[in-house]
Image 1 (tube, each protein chain N blue to C red):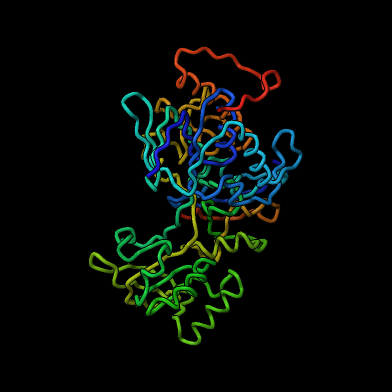
Image 2: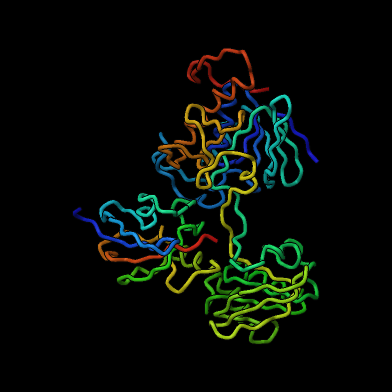
Length: 107
Length: 337
């Protein structure tokens, strides 16, 4: 597909899947994972308030810094790591090609 | 203990729950609305009252808070009653097929139909993954501070880095005998004044502040007496403590509804799209809390679901009566007395 990148997701069982993500749809990583029926609750729908789309970034190009809402939420999460992100706040752009994330357990 | 009798008990006072009052009211059915939050509006009031919504038909742009105000005005003629700040706990089917709904404050609602419009669910404290933690709940482990006096002259360990962790650290420092704040990060993103205060209290020795730290274990014999803290992934050490209060924010959960015998799928209630009924006769689920093939979590769809639900509920509440769809343009709004 033109205007698409690949992202890789490590599932709860340790296996990895590769997802094709269009860059021209204004989607977030969370939305791409949900569209592919991965086990991501994302209950709040992308407002950075539930953290049920929490991922750990294992490999990436430089990512945009979390905004205040996301940063605050990450700080309150008990098991966040230094590369934790809310996947609902990561917009799919060409820069994200090759991104590897790991689904984090739901707290 | 309050006792309420009504036609329909609506669980959830968000936009869809409120609009269900309207659709029920057109069919002369009375509603009582329960919500765990102290105000109506659900997410719209609690999370994004100042955010504009662009996909409500007929409103190019409407602030979430204004939509709630408008819905409240729209349902006024039907005189709904409310129980706010109480969470629904129990649902019991009576012998005659009607229901008894009981809240966290033991308010009883007797009704013929229950409509669950619970949205994301109710917000519950997020619990850290620490082994045995749940066994100590109420025995030294608490997720919120209800009565600060309980901690007077006690050894208290707080964990978390958000505003509530900072605020309670400041407050409880004057109450507890010994107070430790355990925070995973190296700095705080909360209100800067609170963060500075906590740091200076630590420097002056009023509290103990452990950064880059996590509570990894809880100990005690029937009652909590110590927690283990790991600092910067080095050797863990143990702090004696009477109370451990993890403050990691809130996460929406289905809550007690999960145990009502409803058919669930991925945390949502399965419904029949004919009338948004659940597997329990007389119980409906509308809005973000339900699921069906093709479900979209939109306010718009919740409104539609409310209308279809009301038609079906009418048949339960008025057995044997025939109903023909009437238009508000023809009949106006008939106030419920």
